[in-house]
Image (cartoon, rainbow over all chains, first blue to last red; front, side, top):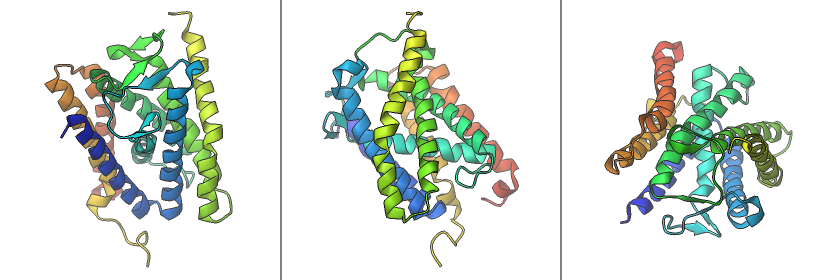
Length: 209
Length: 67
């Protein structure tokens, strides 16, 4: 078996473990919302980014990934879920807080953003080996190991936007199925917000390049 | 009684930690094999979170109880 295909399957299996953890410790409503919303976000966002030339960001390397949904690798349907879930869980434990319960919520969200940026260092360094991503532009500002600073900012912003939207929809007083559907539909708001978040940073750092 | 009413066992509680550790080891391992390991990028940032998590688990009351 190809090494990278094995990695894709391992990532899917590890995500299944996280879904199990979420269901056991956070309940069905949270789990459905989080992972269904994350799957929708990955599916729509990554296809938009890969196919809309005007965004001038990146596309995925067809020589690396094996499993695809449109122009995006299948793994992207779980990628945002598992990274943000890890960020949230680690941040809640370290800060002693709870996103839904409200205890130290600000610290949990801020720490989740920092975690995402830290995880991105690991991910981008790994991604550059294959490479997973084909950049359409030269990043103006890079940090350790050549990681585009814009991507760190983007990961952190995704945690902020995803968790705040999740919190907003989770607190709606309606049946779980409706909240899941609303959260999935909210990707049409989350994606432009995230692209705007990235565009602001790109504009601010463009003078450096 | 649903599954949330029962306190999850140690393995279930620590699934996120295990998952991150597996990703961390695989990523860094492949980078070592490809001779591309960069400690500042691949090991230290996520490693600091792993250390902080372990320290909190070991020192908190919940951690001592295995929670």
